[in-house]
Image (cartoon, rainbow, N blue to C red; front, side, top):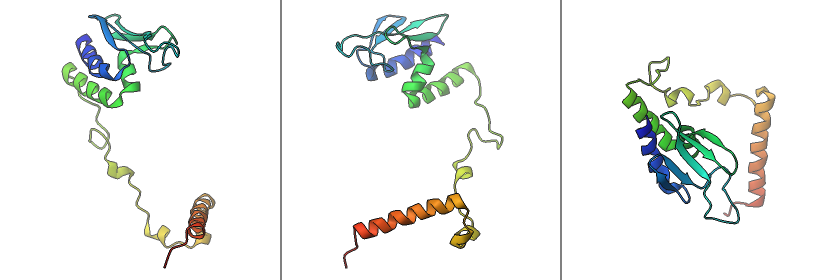
Length: 152
């Protein structure tokens, strides 16, 4: 959907250096990947242009070439999420459903809650890697106490 890509390129236009529409189907700005010329801040060699009903990005300095949707995804992830939502809505497609029935997995699935037996473990029972992490944290706290003793 060419009009949708044009809309979202126009939305990010203000965040790009030296950005301007050359004509209806060509957007020019400084390349965010290479930064363009170090000597001349007015050079803008990054272009978005239409190829087969879709915008494509091409930098004529570093040679970076990608679709404009991927360009937005790399440089403006929040805007990309909005683009995807609108694209799904306009195309009539539904987002993929997770196995649990949710559109996206719940954050509660990934929450860490230590089991009671781990909290009550003896230091000698802790596996090696976890013990090293615990030991390093303990040494860091001892250093902090020695370096900054509490006032009484």
